[in-house]
Length: 239
Image (cartoon, rainbow, N blue to C red):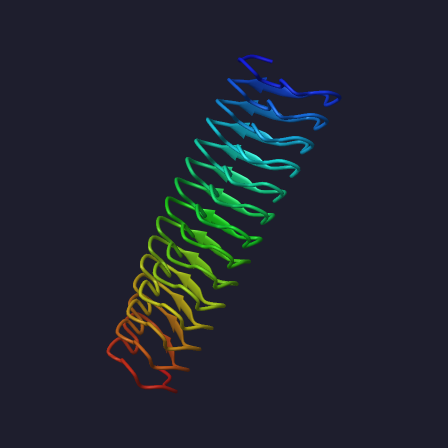
């Protein structure tokens, strides 16, 4: 124990390490915790096997187990959510009870509260997600404005960036489906693929800037560079 007030309330908790003022200071019976930084795991009482590195990392955690938080205020609001990993300042900062999330990058999954089983890698990935679950976002600002939508996959810078409630989309490539908001069940593979799509659903676009200008057209299939790139609202086309 290193730091004023660290492990101050511990009664029977064993194998804990605390370094930093008020780190693990409320812990009573929780075991196998590691806290390094001011007020890291400061509210933890019975939670076990947590790792908090950084000022106020896992600061409000009380009973949750098996969380890892590295970075200033990472997983700060978490209370009972278990099995989360947050690496980066403010990563998963507002998470409260959600479990099994992974956030790597500054403000990745920052406002997530109860959304479960999400993976966000990159600055701002899934940043404003709140309750959406089972999504994967890899890349700077990928799925950054998603709030409640689930089962989306975004790989590439700004892919599915402004998506809010559209479910079950797959976007792979720089800016793929960047303007999609509520449309669901689309697949876009390639840089700029379906970049202008907003509400058009059930489309498949494979190739650089394929279906680039599509906005509301649905159930189209485009394979190859620039395929159906001028299509805007037409549906049921194959190219």
